[in-house]
Length: 318
Image (cartoon, rainbow, N blue to C red; front, top):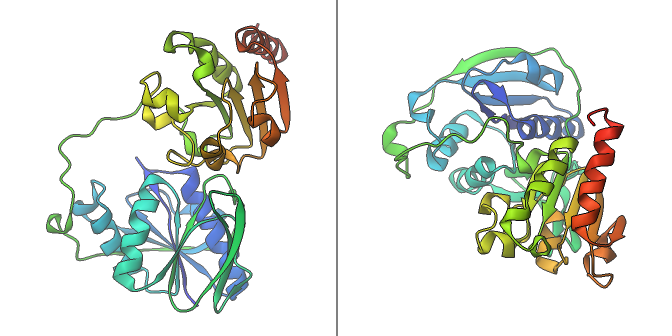
């Protein structure tokens, strides 16, 4: 059983999610008694992938892949990944490619997995269902395309001897289904929300966008990403890129700090994969406290600045 994985990279560097996908592919290969072949678009170094279990790295060079297009990427992967299992990270890019790739290769699609499969024939794996409120076990025969939930499986070093080769694909600009009019680069110092180990999030309890400075200060001292609830993004206090929840981004950081968020079920659906949840709210009846590992009842405008100050002292930044 051949195991392939798309090792997502940007500007010559692998995304954390790409390395997680390679780690997951290696765990799958161990169950199958086979090896991992990683596919790379671009010039990121192959050596790093050997550390996470890829025995072969196939680099695909094609000018038509310089700009992301799901159809073009899926076509290229379909040509190279001639195997039974193809693993992708559940990033915006990976989640967009996966269903197109599954359609092109007539494979089953299993999304947002967190643990390695218990068997590969048929491919049997548990995944979250019903907005994270349940666990379902799926078993599919034949080819399968799998996406790995970010920050859930983790990066696991499992070094192997590896080899590198190049491959050409019959992808051209005509395969692109989306025309890129312009590209706007995100701030290089901003932490990727879905890859962040720590996330500080806030909601309508902040009373207005002008008060978000204390959230950003807390995030900065923790080395965290910032996020928001859906209502906050809808009224324009924060960009929609920061919205986490059922209709926003699903995240699974090691630490999630929720400030002034009541904890509606739709919000919980996007953050219930967090390892530790801390809730700060002045309403002791807020639903979020039922899901929290630690809770602080009180005024966020008093608590958050004090917490930031103490963390700065602890880190010697005061």
